[in-house]
Image (spheres, rainbow, N blue to C red):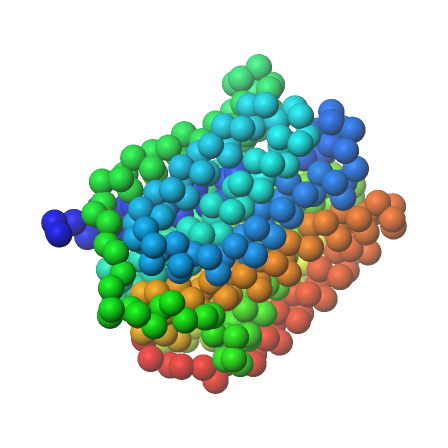
Length: 387
């Protein structure tokens, strides 16, 4: 098998990571407009966010088996191709059924790609996992922030057509397909024969890690769907509301890169998890009870806290298992349980808004979930210390 430069492997990883979020976050700046044009309730339009997250949970356990059948690299190529097709479907997104179907396909592709990218890190970057996860999570943060920040301007460029604004994210996904096709495919052999075993359901730490991931993911996707609407309802202009959420997403860039690097350098990932939980709780409390008081500050801190929580959660399975596909199994369980539970938060937030008449009651619950996430981070503190 030919040797691939380490820089090319890292570039492929980052490009794949960039494509895991824009299909979801690009809806946030347009969601109220889409709901109005398609005459959809808030709870129904939230399916465009919730269904991908649910698929990301339910289908994650399939990833190790597909890697055994087709090879890790080629399976990731198929995932990127499915993401490309799902985003192109949004050119016909003015039909609500097609918009929701694209969300399901998108979630299925991300579900399989996520665990395998963790296995890819374990295979090619042993000894550098913290630093490489920093680049990996930075790629996801770039994609997520790009979906929020750039979708509205791109929509304006295409004659204010939101279908083109959503579908344009197929271009980086197509670029990812082309790059990953250049990588050699490595089939799994006897050295990872145990990878055909089930997920680590009997491991208490696996449940703690999955619980933490579920809480941070639920908070992220609830905010990705409804933060702009919350700010706007509180009296801020739509432009100001969008800029605040964009600022929060952009703050995920430094935290996604910096915190895994610090965890690798100082072996303090559990203390950092706890700090992110505290920061997220305080920030959400302010957005809930005083959204117009120093809103830029709390947008910065919420983005930093949740971005760091996500990045650090990606590191955890890498230190719990030995082989690449064993890591994929731990990651698959984390994503399966985490995303399955997290998928409920956008729907329930939208439903609670419809029932209560304003966003404060559901955001009080979100603040409580952030406090619970902090407690789970505290329980994780006695985990493996090797780096």
